[in-house]
Length: 461
Image 1: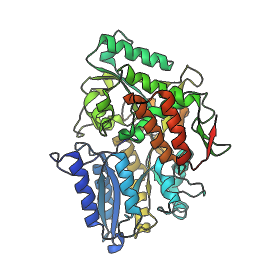
Image 2: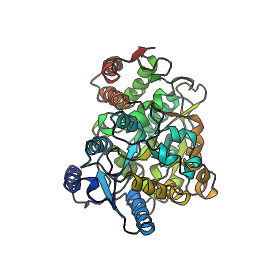
Image 3: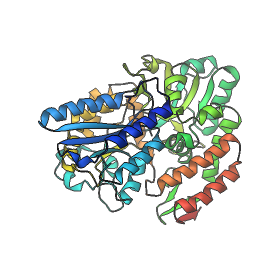
Image 4: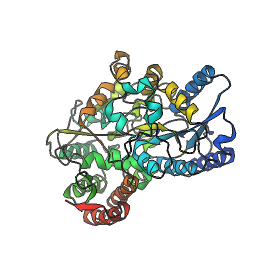
């Protein structure tokens, strides 16, 4: 998932110390969200990149609007500065007690069902039924935060798609076309091999991998491969007919083989960099802007890091980078593949001020504010009225490309077991990335982990 940007801690603090101090501050200030009925506590994911402040600035604006419209009410923003996996852990710790639960929390769609099952979140249906703007949200986005009980537990603030970003200057040096569009996995790998041979000073191809990258490895990396192994009509990860997770598939091994090839042939970043928890910041903030990475399998949100005031300003990116869809394995229909996810705003079950929290959501999700957020965050609109607005479609290069991928996209089987399944995928990827495991060994290890993660609800295909 995208790392949602922002920062408050000084740049001089080491990342680990920054995370520790933020966690300490949260514990110290969390005397209970019920301590003041006129104060709304809003918890969100803050970027680990100190120069990226898109979320901070957006929420500061909404806070100002909300306090002006609601005299006597105050909004306390509670940032959690951490990589994805640490953020998820911290949020779950906070949601367990009324003393630490915020009134509003930012939830990744991949984790929300796990938190729903744990009883950490409040169903929003009574609020949504009285909110006319809910009719503007596209149906697929509405289902992102819907649980197996049929109730909705979050309001999405956008979605995303994924594809291949490539450096046209590097491609020109390598003698490759600057309007590149591979038709198969082999064509992606062949382009990377050509770049390695002809432009040896750059990294040919980035595919996120391993546990340190967290869900970025699973979704931007592995699933972009796995979901391109069939014809797009069946889910290669979860069997909906039997309601079981799929083990022992050739598709899984094929996706692992691609990852193994990238790192065995040294087409990707060196293993130490690939397994750095801050790899996404390294890619977006250093490798791509500095012309050191030829191909990046990544998400639609990257330009947020290159906008004015981001700290990594790169106004030339739209001229220097090309976009290509990720092809299916052998070019089979539909020919292209994408994954979609996104984040939602949810109200904790133990929130002290749930009504006030939903009022804050409504302020964030007016057409004007939603459009402002999609553009600033390089997100894909989930409101129909925004998607149809030319001001949105023309706001930034690449928006149309990534919006068009929605027709070919897939959504993760975001059931309660998914976070554990995702971790098992990351472990398998890491095994073939380091060379400690063969594809067969890593796939076998995944199958064993899957049985535990899915409580035995596994089927072989």
